[in-house]
Image (cartoon, one colour):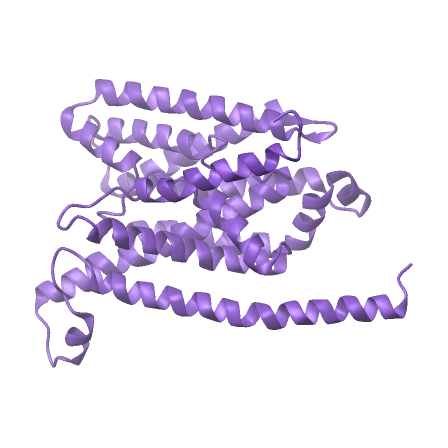
Length: 353
């Protein structure tokens, strides 16, 4: 039983964390705004935002580049970055595994497989215009959902989620999905092949307000849902058995959370391709800087994920002007060394790794 002195110390520690937390979040928001302004100005075509705002009139070309091409693209990078970071945070909490990530456990690649199949279908079958906007996201959602169901069947047990089996099964699903995606690329025509190849490496080219509106809805709804169940997720991240003793319906929360993760990953992958390691790197960095409590970790992961992907996409556009580097290559340059670092760190904890 905690003494009054201990309770006071805990309350003081929480208050101190809140004081440290607020300026850091403010710094994240300011950094995100700065990156957004830089991204609006950066690109193959020289369009100065400040000159456009100060001018009495602007050319139609400048208006189109700024607000019809660059602005929805920048917002999309922030939305998908926040969504992928959120999914990584939730998966790591549910699975109690620091290596859990939509890309590493096969969710992203399965969504990419079904999205690639949808691209192949659209190249041969002419669907009504209102269906074409939703066909690829729905196909990606189906792929992500099927992979999650398969993972649950393999890794879940009465004792809880077997983390080692989860990672191994995810690696197998990832390899199988990428193999089938390669088979699709082999049989499609050249135009569809180029589209799938560039898209599979991650690209925000061609983003418009329609794709943005489709993506933003599940990300916002998922964020709201996970914020509402953050205390249950926190209990599950410590011990699923203890969470059950506290009255948490762990099975229901796990299933609904995984379906929500599948929906978010599906819409992100269907429009932008595979942007790897965001869900792995961002939650860990936020834990190091801000702490592990989900009251702090969820909002900081959202902001940090948005910042990372927006910055990576800006670099992808300006490194080799007028060409554009796939954003997945840039995030992988950051994610692969960080992933190896996590493996080495986990090796010191577990003899079987």
